[in-house]
Length: 301
Image (cartoon, rainbow, N blue to C red; front, side, top):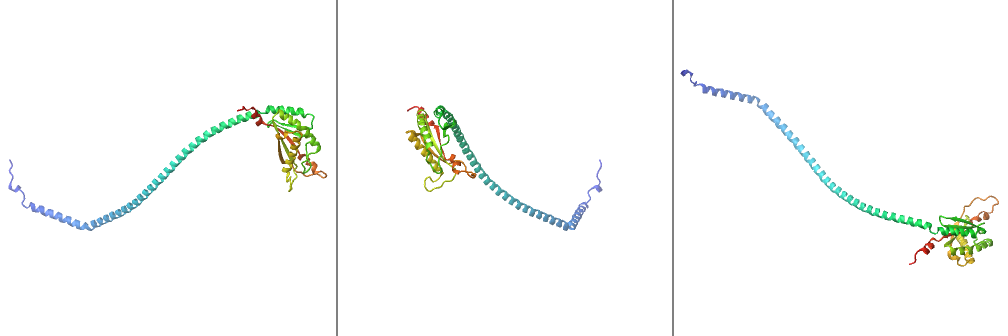
């Protein structure tokens, strides 16, 4: 075993040396801090200023964000109100659409009903078109046989079930007059009994159309104008027919058609009274009385 010698023991001066070393190190550190303290303070102040600036900027950003947030909140509020208004309008539109759909259904139903009525009316019209056609054909045949040797012209109109009778030459009047000439009276007196006997066989009525020439007529006393004058001419013929064949008047209809024809420039030597005579006339139109035929064929109650 190796023994430890005395001189190998701890140095009694060592603790002092440690203290001196620690003091020296602390002194050196104090000197270093003293030498760098202004710079450290300056750095701290700079950092503090930067931090203050950042805080100020953040406060400004925060204020701006608050304003933006308030603006967004206001916009959201307005948008909410707009959405509510839009919802109300959408609801109104939906109600309007529902009402329109209901009206459309009603209109469609009405259209269907109207189409059915139109179809029914067309069918009735087609049926009416044939009513009286046979009577018209038979009446035309009888008239042609009765008036074959008379000075009358027969003009048939099948579509309207009418037959026009004109004189040949035509029954005319003097200017501004409504009295018949003796020859025209005689022709109509011969015609009247024929028409009355035909009326006993076929149901028709007679329209007497009077006309006037295109020259203007204005007078304070009747006839005051061409319409009244033409009506008086038709009435004169009606009175004469009734006189020649009593009872025929109930089937007569008087119509004043007024002016017929157009005025024209006359050549030298032309007499206007004779040029326009053809327009101062009357015509007789026999029309099948469809209503009377239908009434006669309808079942009695």
